[in-house]
Length: 112
Image 1 (cartoon, rainbow, N blue to C red):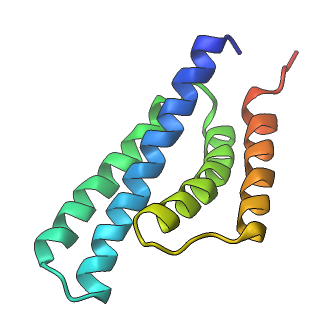
Image 2: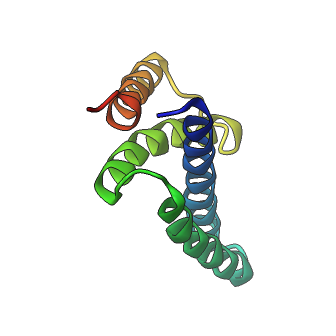
Protein backbone atom coordinates (compact mmCIF):
# COMPACT_ATOMS: atom_id res chain seq x y z
CA UNK A 1 0.00 0.00 0.00
CA UNK A 2 1.48 3.41 -0.93
CA UNK A 3 2.53 5.61 2.03
CA UNK A 4 -0.11 8.24 1.25
CA UNK A 5 -2.85 5.60 1.35
CA UNK A 6 -1.48 4.26 4.64
CA UNK A 7 -1.62 7.75 6.17
CA UNK A 8 -5.17 8.23 4.90
CA UNK A 9 -6.16 4.87 6.32
CA UNK A 10 -4.61 5.66 9.71
CA UNK A 11 -6.38 9.03 9.80
CA UNK A 12 -9.70 7.33 9.04
CA UNK A 13 -9.11 4.75 11.78
CA UNK A 14 -8.37 7.56 14.23
CA UNK A 15 -11.43 9.56 13.23
CA UNK A 16 -13.68 6.50 13.43
CA UNK A 17 -12.28 5.64 16.85
CA UNK A 18 -12.76 9.13 18.21
CA UNK A 19 -16.34 9.14 16.94
CA UNK A 20 -17.15 5.75 18.43
CA UNK A 21 -15.48 6.35 21.78
CA UNK A 22 -16.58 9.99 22.00
CA UNK A 23 -20.16 9.19 21.06
CA UNK A 24 -20.27 6.26 23.46
CA UNK A 25 -18.78 8.41 26.20
CA UNK A 26 -21.49 11.05 25.73
CA UNK A 27 -24.18 8.36 26.00
CA UNK A 28 -22.38 6.98 29.07
CA UNK A 29 -22.43 10.40 30.71
CA UNK A 30 -26.15 10.73 30.00
CA UNK A 31 -27.19 7.28 31.23
CA UNK A 32 -24.63 6.43 33.89
CA UNK A 33 -23.87 9.83 35.34
CA UNK A 34 -27.32 11.41 35.00
CA UNK A 35 -26.13 14.17 32.69
CA UNK A 36 -28.29 15.99 30.15
CA UNK A 37 -30.24 14.03 27.53
CA UNK A 38 -28.75 16.49 25.03
CA UNK A 39 -25.42 14.74 25.59
CA UNK A 40 -27.08 11.41 24.84
CA UNK A 41 -28.60 12.76 21.63
CA UNK A 42 -25.30 14.30 20.57
CA UNK A 43 -23.63 10.97 21.33
CA UNK A 44 -26.12 9.26 19.03
CA UNK A 45 -25.27 11.66 16.20
CA UNK A 46 -21.54 11.13 16.71
CA UNK A 47 -22.08 7.35 16.72
CA UNK A 48 -23.91 7.65 13.41
CA UNK A 49 -20.90 9.48 11.97
CA UNK A 50 -18.75 6.63 13.28
CA UNK A 51 -20.85 4.27 11.17
CA UNK A 52 -20.07 6.28 8.04
CA UNK A 53 -16.33 6.88 8.46
CA UNK A 54 -15.14 3.25 8.07
CA UNK A 55 -16.85 3.04 4.67
CA UNK A 56 -14.15 5.43 3.43
CA UNK A 57 -11.37 2.90 4.15
CA UNK A 58 -9.62 1.61 1.02
CA UNK A 59 -9.61 -1.99 2.34
CA UNK A 60 -12.51 -4.45 2.06
CA UNK A 61 -15.11 -4.52 4.85
CA UNK A 62 -13.82 -7.51 6.82
CA UNK A 63 -10.21 -6.38 6.79
CA UNK A 64 -11.06 -2.79 7.69
CA UNK A 65 -13.31 -3.77 10.59
CA UNK A 66 -10.93 -6.44 11.90
CA UNK A 67 -8.04 -3.97 11.93
CA UNK A 68 -10.25 -1.25 13.40
CA UNK A 69 -10.81 -3.49 16.42
CA UNK A 70 -7.14 -3.14 17.31
CA UNK A 71 -7.18 0.61 16.76
CA UNK A 72 -10.27 0.86 18.96
CA UNK A 73 -8.47 -0.95 21.80
CA UNK A 74 -5.57 1.51 21.71
CA UNK A 75 -7.77 4.59 21.39
CA UNK A 76 -9.91 3.35 24.29
CA UNK A 77 -6.81 3.13 26.47
CA UNK A 78 -5.76 6.63 25.43
CA UNK A 79 -9.26 8.00 26.08
CA UNK A 80 -9.29 6.26 29.43
CA UNK A 81 -6.07 7.95 30.48
CA UNK A 82 -6.63 11.39 28.99
CA UNK A 83 -10.35 11.95 29.47
CA UNK A 84 -11.56 9.55 32.15
CA UNK A 85 -8.32 9.87 34.17
CA UNK A 86 -7.99 6.08 34.48
CA UNK A 87 -4.33 5.47 33.72
CA UNK A 88 -3.66 2.23 31.79
CA UNK A 89 -1.19 -0.13 33.46
CA UNK A 90 1.74 -1.90 31.80
CA UNK A 91 -0.40 -4.87 30.77
CA UNK A 92 -2.87 -2.53 29.06
CA UNK A 93 0.04 -0.94 27.20
CA UNK A 94 1.54 -4.28 26.14
CA UNK A 95 -1.89 -5.47 24.99
CA UNK A 96 -2.36 -2.25 23.02
CA UNK A 97 1.00 -2.75 21.32
CA UNK A 98 0.04 -6.31 20.39
CA UNK A 99 -3.18 -4.94 18.88
CA UNK A 100 -1.26 -2.38 16.81
CA UNK A 101 1.03 -5.10 15.46
CA UNK A 102 -2.10 -7.00 14.45
CA UNK A 103 -3.51 -3.91 12.73
CA UNK A 104 -0.29 -3.48 10.76
CA UNK A 105 -0.30 -7.11 9.64
CA UNK A 106 -3.98 -7.12 8.68
CA UNK A 107 -4.02 -3.79 6.86
CA UNK A 108 -0.57 -3.13 5.53
CA UNK A 109 1.20 -6.43 4.91
CA UNK A 110 2.19 -6.77 1.24
CA UNK A 111 -0.17 -8.98 -0.70
CA UNK A 112 0.42 -10.44 -4.12
